[in-house]
View 1 (cartoon, rainbow, N blue to C red):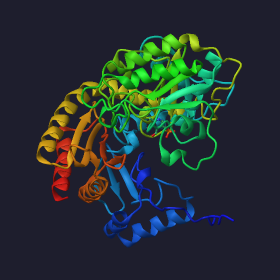
View 2 (tube, helix red, strand yellow):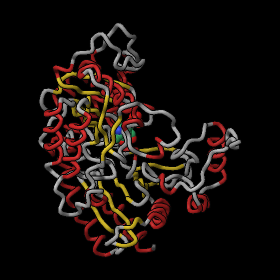
View 3 (cartoon, rainbow, N blue to C red):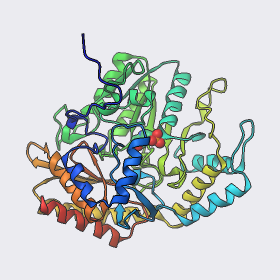
View 4 (cartoon, protein in one colour):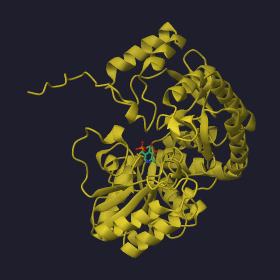
Length: 458
Ligand SMILES: Cc1ncc(COP(=O)(O)O)c(C=O)c1O
């Protein structure tokens, strides 16, 4: 008889292949980093591990935070780090004073909205999102998380098309709920989860560096053609669901989305773009699909929508997809939370008034140039890429074979953490840099200098 895994004993065997969504918080380098922590911090980390359920990617925690302001976080020992991760919620910087003021004001007035009623901040937010979103994306539904908004989009696609199948991408992430991991493509979320939603077809993402069609630099969009192939073979796909630009980042070629848009139209499938982490200016445009000159049928936004303080996401759908009045698409308790809506309105106003899109466009060109200089200097860097403040440095053992330099990437990460820079590793070897949109050139330089030094030391 097969031995049962003892309850409460997480299996942490060889997890290298699972390093897709982020570094795993495990391993020898991770344990060694604990030497940076004082007894008080260790005490709180032990309490954290004692009282929270353990799960991959989150457990064990690295450190304990005391405060966050602007582009930085500060730990209990008073160490400040530039946060080039921020779970990508910090478009307007952490603890943005205008967002906090709007939240406090709203809390004094109307702190919650009982169902059956609506409220002015929520209505103003829906109107603002409809104005900002391209084309005829004019109908909004709010939810307290990105995964929930993705679930609403899937339900609406089913209701509108009478079909249930989807096409989405391997290696993509759309949230951690069962419906979101069904369309997501990351092993760490899917493996061992049991039966997922039926009819979720997966295709390769538009990543010419690791393309199964071997396109390489001479990309001829075979991956987009393959989506049309699957649309045709299946014949009854409700929706293609994808991140416009994968946060890793994989930046699709300019014509990619035009091709996919046209294929969806030919086969009666809806196009749902997930811009949860990259909406509201991260790519230098309010929405990333604007770079590609297409309008999806549904756009899903979140993360920084709540001003970096409130959990808030939104589904923005085409006007004529208002077809599910007799169905519960979301129906979440905090659906029209007035305080979350006030935070979102203040964040959007800040982005507009401070002209953050122009700032991102300008400073990201400078940053990418600096990254290219680093690539000339360090053999370990196999590729650098970026769109706005979504920047990636791919570390490889060998530039021809592009073999992932996973250990080296972790070394760079722990070195940077010790010197005051936090960032995320994706796919095990890609340094992903997503700073607050408010950072100055001096802060960008400081971060890139830390990276330069740490890569040089490996
Ligand atoms: C592309 C993408 N979609 C969806 C989600 C899920 O959002 P949430 O964590 O708010 O459920 C995330 C979160 O990281 C994301 O990056």
